[in-house]
Image (tube, rainbow, N blue to C red; front, side, top):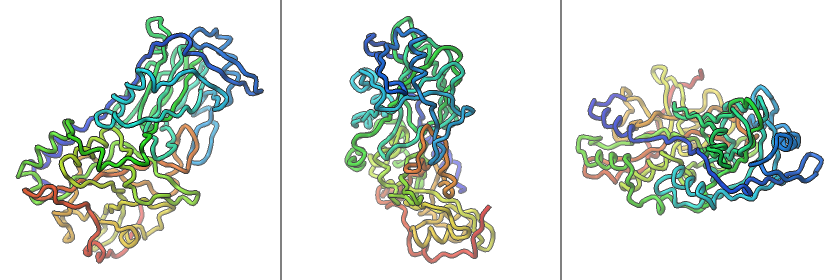
Length: 440
C-alpha cells in the first residue's frame, strides 16, 4: 500500500521498538548431590550415577542404556543418523532430585523469558526426556514439537560431564546466537548445570560433540493458566515498554492515520494449533491463542489493550484470482482451515464459509481506506494443505502444529481512536465476486 513518507516513518519507528530477545542461557552452580541420576537400562536393571564426578566408564554405561533417539517428521517418528545422532531414555525410566522452578533458574526463566507483566503467570515444568550425545553426536536444525496449547517453551539442562563441542545454536527472525554449553557446565571448575530456556518455536540445533559425552535433560514449559487466563483482565495494567510509549505517542498525533484503519502485525512467533486425525482443527477460531502469546507478540497485545484499542488474531491466506486482471489477494479470517485446499475454490470458500475479508489493493475500486491494514511488521501466511504439517521436530505429532498468525489492531479516526471495532466481514465483502481462481 502506498502511504506518505510521514506515515512510513511512523510505522518504521514503531516497528523498531519491537525487540526479539536472545534465548536465556548460562551456568547454574549447585551442590554435588543435585547431579545424581537414577535410571534403568534396557534390561530393566536400576543404576545410579553422579554426573558431577562420574568416570568415563560410568557415563559410557549410561550411554549404552539408551535407545536411539528419533525425531519427528509430521506424524512419523524417524531414525536417521544423517539428521540426528543421539541416545535417549524416556520417563519413567529415569529420575533426578532437582526442581528448576525452586531455584534461581526458575526465577530467571520467569523474569527473562516471559518478561514484564507475563512474568507473574504460573509456569508448569514438565520433565520430558534424557538425551546422551557421544562423540560425533548432533541434532540438525529443528523446532521443538508443540505438546499442547499452553506450551510456550523448552528448558534444556546440560550436565557437567567431561566433553567438548555440542554447542547449541539458535536462530530466529534473522538473528543467531551460539551457546557453548560444555564450557558453561564446567565453568571455573564448579559443578554446574549449563542451561538454555527458549521459546519452543525457535529453530535450534546441536553441533557435533568432539569428545566425551554430552548428557542433557529437557523440560517442556507451559503456562499453567492457559485454559483460564483472560487477556482482557490480565493485560490492561499500565505497560511501560518502548512499544507502548511509541504507540500512545502516535495515537495522540493528528497526522497519524487521521481517518483510522488497522495496524497489522505479523507475529514473530508461531503457535500450536490442534488438529484431529482427519487434519481438521479442533478449534477453528484462533482467539484462544491470545492467552499464550510469547515475547514481543504479548507486548504488542498488552500495549494495544492498555491504550483502549481493539485487537484480534487473524490467519492470512494467499489467493490468486482473476477479476478484470490477474491479482494476488490476501484474505483475513479468524479461523483455521484444515485439510487440503481445493484448487480454484479457496477465495470463495473463505469468503462464503469463514467470514473472510479480502484486503483489496489500493488501486482497486473496492479498496476502502477505513478498512485498510497497514503492516508494521511483515505479514505472515497460513501453510497450504496437509503437506505443510510434515515439519521437522524433536518428536512426532499431528495433534498440534505450528501456525503463523497476524494481530490486527483497530485505530479510530482522530479524536475517536478507541472506537474502531475489530475487522469483520460486511455486506460489501459478501457480495464481491471474482471471475475465477488459479494456483501457482
